[in-house]
Image (cartoon, rainbow, N blue to C red; front, top):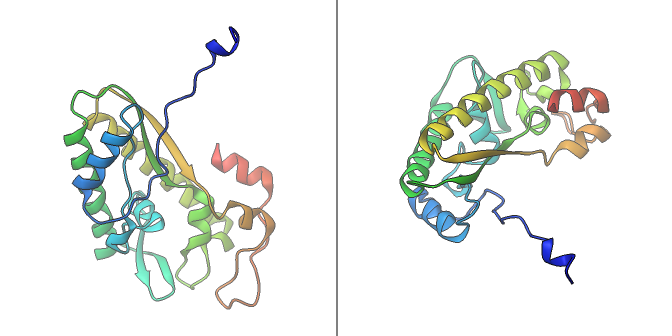
Length: 202
């Protein structure tokens, strides 16, 4: 019993996505429920740009994405979809700043990782960025810089926070196993070498 008395659970936090479309209401709920480890909520019900892929695409630096009937596609310049994603993220950060006045402690922000992004963002030809190793490298570099800026902004708004970054990689298994389908749907993109995957994530 005396050994177990030293054991302590870490603070609980949430996954990230929440129902509804009201940023202030979502942040109010999060900060009230997870007092010791709040997080910046995502509200995918608002539509394209608030979803996991669109939100992270909006964080990219010098790379832009727009919504096509087939999904998110990399484009030449920031269009309304990029602007919408950035506007919603700004709204969420405003709400977070409002409800975390004086907060000190861990604060989680989350984004999609580079391999899930590469599997879900299309190049101009309609194929996943995953099909082009150069595009994967560019995407990872752009994301790394975008996340650096995002963390700096979150830290500026909540100066007492110890920021924790959660990278979501729901497509990682499919990337490693060569299960990501091509645009035609008849084939799959070749598996990415595990060492390349690990190096990029580092």
